[in-house]
Image: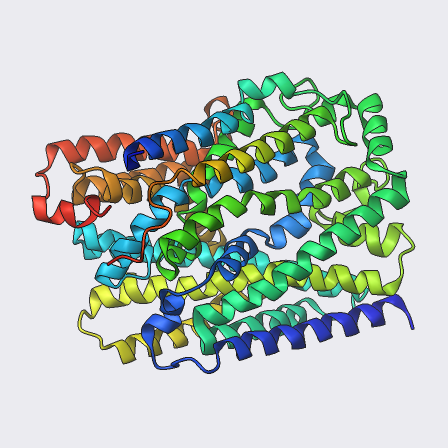
Length: 73
Length: 488
């Protein structure tokens, strides 16, 4: 994979979950109930997307064409 | 032994260990090296880097302010974990690039970075000054946090001025002697401590008061469901305000000099791995929010001077908790405030030296520069202390305005990295206009259109002006542009 293609995918992967956590999309989860894992739904939703982002980025890192680059300059 | 005595002993013990860790970390290194002082020789590892970036965000604000927000505003407090998790992500792409440019031209500041592409002492001085004022404001908040903690947990026995002096004095000493490496290792120690403490204390409070989070949230959802929502009838914050507050925090985060310049302190791989592991830090903040929700309905807001005191108030007054738990909260809050204060003091001194002083006196040797930086740590420390303890009256507005203006660096920084057509005049006029607009809406106007955050209004005008002026002024030479944009 080329570096610019990787960057595009990286930006998309970071942006989608972020959009789910701000308005207008956050409206989907903007309520107190149901309470899941002891948290109100809005609270649970935020944590859920943070975990999803974390997992996808870790997978994405393995595809980074530059991940093994030796030190530069 | 009464609770406050145990708390005092534990906090003093913590301060002694913090001083020891800080001073030891800087030992055995080349103390006459400018690179070592400024960027730890560019060789910080993943573990240290993660705590350095995390410690900076885990500030007095998170320890006192996050419970305060959850208690007084409810759901909008979620903005804190949202922005913490996402603000770091752009660093994966820009961090390694900034690092490479920095190593090529020996940079260690934001001011130096912009000067390198745009060749403008005026720009560097401007950035240096905004960074200085913003940092002093930031430090003053941390310091009053430390002083409040000392004061409340010893039930008023340690006066405000002494608490601030003790805890911040230690920070100044280890930063001036050990530079970035001392700040970094202190942050590891302080980071581990505050994470453990926030979980122990947070869960203890929730379970003692409510028997569990489900019970707690069920009762809030039954009585005041709008407290757990945003932008509803009776909610404390509108949807536009919530969204733009997150945006401004996400964009501004990496522009803070103490975070930006960490790009120079490590290699690409470490930077990328730090970004990957970072969202976990956001989750560490969860128990602190729970504390705020737990206080809802238990603490009457009339009893507090400000919502930020809800955590110490719960511990000392409402609940019957053992003295060692007092002490833990004290140590955790001090750790949170100090791990932010050390990085900011360090970077403020660097920005002023590099941006302002080196733009006026151009031919300073490394030895003199290093000396100025060390002295700068004390001067900035003293200024911040003065503002905290005696208040600055006329200065306060200036500092607050600068604090909100850090995000205005973003258009210039991203242009320097990616936009070939950006010109010096474009970036300077964008920065000036953006700062003024932000300043106006933050401090002069009583409200903003649609509740949009002042910083976003500033950013929009900044970008429009920067792009327009760039296109009407002469483009930079190919060579000047390629030095930055072409760095892979």
